[in-house]
Length: 246
Length: 302
Image (cartoon, rainbow over all chains, first blue to last red; front, side, top):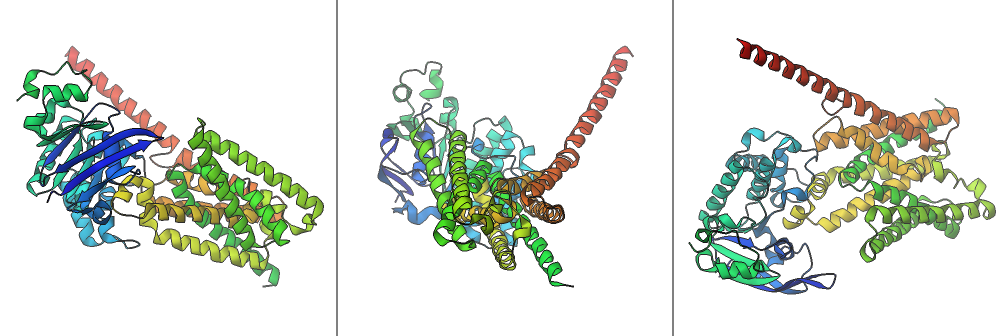
C-alpha cells in the first residue's frame, strides 16, 4: 500500500479552477519533487492536501486511510516567508512547537520533548543557535529551524513548500542531507521545487504540475524535455541537455 | 478603615486586574496583527450596548455583554463581507465599519439620553469611561471575569502562541485552530466589554495594544512579553483610575496617557531594542570602524 495517494483532487478559488483532477500515488521512502511554473498550483496542492483550503472534489489517503484520520502522520514545512520572524521567541521554542501534537492541549512540554527538540536542532546543524532570537537568524538558518520543527513532529510523510528558496549553499547541502536521511528511514517526502537544474540530482520521483498533472513518475523516465516543455508552455530554453536526459 | 476606602481599594484592584487581562490578551492581538480588529470590536460594542440598554431598561453587564458580542459579530461579518465581495482591502473595510457602528452607537446614545432617563443611567460613561462610577457589584463582576480571562489565557498560552506564530503549521499538527481562534476572539470581546465602563469605547482598544507594544521593547520571549504587557496594563489602569478619582477627569484618556508614557519610555530607553541604545550601538560601531580604517591606512604606509 502506498503511503500517500491523491485521488482526483480539484480545487477552485472564486469559481476559477486552480487544480483540476489531480491524481498521483507515491511509494514509500521516496523523495518527490513537485515542479511547475508560477501559478501552477504547487503550494495550493499542498494546502489542499492538508485541508487548509477546501477541495471541491477528491480525496487524500495516507496509508490507506483518509487524511483526516491520519493527520498526525503528515508533517508540513511552510514557506519561510509565511510567518513573522520578528515574533518574540527563540529557535528552540519554534522547534518545540513540532512537539505540540504529542504534548496535547494545555500541557507544558516535558523534559524529553526539549531533548528531542535539541536533537532535531543538532541534526540540522543549529544546536549552537538554540537560544538565538529567530529574527537574528539568516534566511538559511530560519529554514533549517523550520525543518528541525518538522523533524520534531516525527511524521511519516513530509510536505515541504519551497525549502530551497533563498538559502545559502551550506543550508541547501544540509537540507539535501536531511532529505536523504529521512528517505533511508522510510519517510516519504514531497518538495515544491523551483530549480530545474538540480531535479535529477535530488529527487527519485517528479510531479510535473500545471493546474493538471502533466506527468508523474520516476525522475529518470519522467523528467524529459517534452514533459518540461508541456509543463512550462514551451518557455524553457536555457536547459542544457545533460540536465534533462541523463 | 471606612467603607469608602474599601470601595476605592476595590476599584483599584479591579482596574489592575482589567489592565493585566487587557495587556495579556493584547499581546496576542498585536502579534496576530489584529490591532485594528480590537479597535473595531470596541467601537462596534457601542450600538450593541445601547440596544441592550433599550431592551432591558437598565444597566446590566450580562446584557451589555450579549449586546456588544452580537454587534461585534455583525461588524466582523460586515468586514469579511466587504473584503470578500469588493476590491476594498481589509484596513479600509475595518475603517468604514468601525465608524458606521460608532456613529450608530452615538445616535442611539443621544436618543437614550434624551428619552429614557439616560442621564441618570450612567450609560454616558461608556464613551470615555469612569472608574468612579463602578459600583460594588460592577467591581465584583469586573474582578471575577478578568481573573477568568487571565486563567484562560495562561491555560491556552502554548496554543495561542502557535496559532499566532504559524497558523498553518498548527492546523497541520492537529491543533484546533478555529476553536482556539474563537476562544481568543471571545477573550478580546470580553475584555473590551468589561473594560468599557471603566475605560470607555473610544480608548479601550488602546489599553489592549499599547501595553503589549511597550512590552515588546524589553524582551524577546513571548512569556515575558505577555507578563510585562499585563504589568504595564495594570500600572496604567491603576494610575489612570487614581488620577481620575481625585481630578474628576474621565478615566479612559488618563489610562491611555499613562500607557502611552510607558510606551514612550520603552521606545526610548529599553536595552537593545530602544532608540537610545540603538543610537549608542551605531556610534560605537562607527568608532570601531574608524579605528580599523586608521590602522589599515597606517599599515599601508608602513
